[in-house]
Length: 244
Image (cartoon, rainbow, N blue to C red; front, side, top):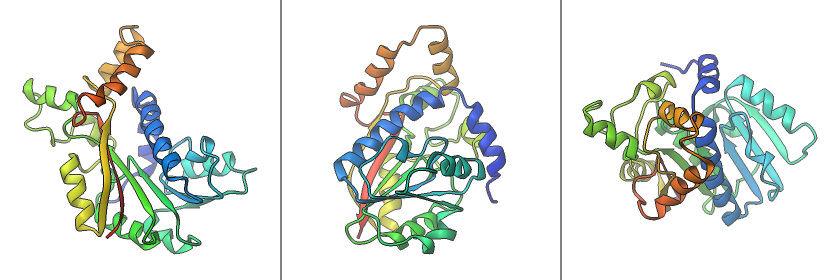
């Protein structure tokens, strides 16, 4: 079944706490880009704030975005930026329009949303060279809030899709091991991986605590840093990979 991108855009706007979660995800992604220093960068799925808004170190940046609203917004934001090219469509459909091999590809918060991740990974492979670094990130099945839900009897196991995941048209829940296995089975070799941002409660509960002043900016920063002590239990996981 194909995704309802219009409904997805509406639900994306309404999702509580996602703006905060996104800020930490973006922080990790920008750190990975800075470490790679790519001359040519591809972002697959840009949401409302493409990476070129905060990253100025690449000569050529290509944004691939299937959602019409997000693609249109990227064009507006990049109107005066000659580095940026926006392709509206799925990577599987527009990969041949990319000019030259990128030094880095960002596939952020996407693999779990597509019904056939193997098809997306095949498209990523098509645009990569032997030295291209690909950054993937997805929600973590072993996030503290999911493990808590298991112990409370709310879900049978941490890989069970939640109501929010179903509403957001997500199809998979990954652990670090299953993410690595998927990448390796589809022609990638993982270079390094990790998790970030400890999230004890659901998005809605986290937002309620923020709104009530129970969770401050200092608390949130502490939860981000806490992954140093609990490296397997961040709310999201990432892997950097190259072609085998």
